[in-house]
Image (cartoon, rainbow, N blue to C red; front, side, top):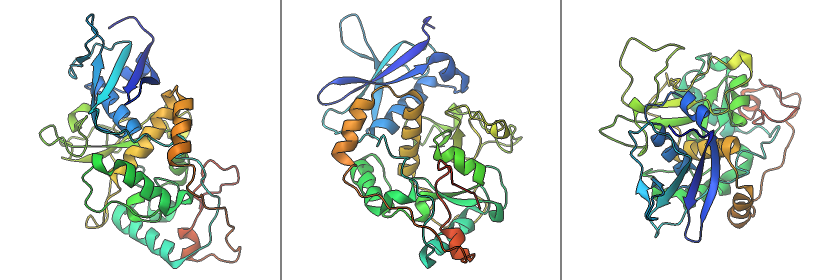
Length: 330
């Protein structure tokens, strides 16, 4: 491996090649991925929204595609997609604007019931639903128009037959313990969905074999499932109470698997934002992209719940703002 402290990641757009991220090599290797280059490829896909490959520069200026089985980490990679495909970058403000409270409604109460029925318990800690919250992947306050915009920009990269079309939908939520909700809302950790190597669906970059498999805190004595959603501990969570959450921790859905699963498109969008928050270096470029594609979309305002309302509806409309200092988990 080259003696370099950092790896710079570039994206070739239709107008220029831009540096988008800088990752400490020691941090990259600490995840324990079997193929670190495959992880970098997935990170850049999640950030720019188009399928592509990693390339390295050569002496004759013709880029050379990376050998994804190599463990030789270089100082610089360029992510190149089909020139005819327009990138669909993340929104740099995509995890912001979480509201503190919203008024109860039967629709949101039903959403929580559906999520409890599908997930059964906190999908990470396995705490029961009475100790868990329905957590939006993309903040509820962003609203349905924002979800539609993500789908409009990114649907060509996915094969979702019925993509999400509103904020309060089961495809945009998980059941998580309140402290995990807080860390997830900050982008401290995110999720990756992977499949066996012979399928490469839905994640074209990584496979089940690339990510350490952890269930209930230790490697299980059984083979990993054919498809899984697992935790990537991006920000190396500093809270000592949550340091048991390791990369590769398998999510458990113990309820009704006939209900729609979380949207891969939204999972990847959250993942891309979380990665950028950790390693991003080009705020000016992504700020302009936000101005051009997302800023015009209105954000819901914070509305207080009536203090006397302690019904299930009130719980369903619980705070979706673990970053707000006034946030109090249910």
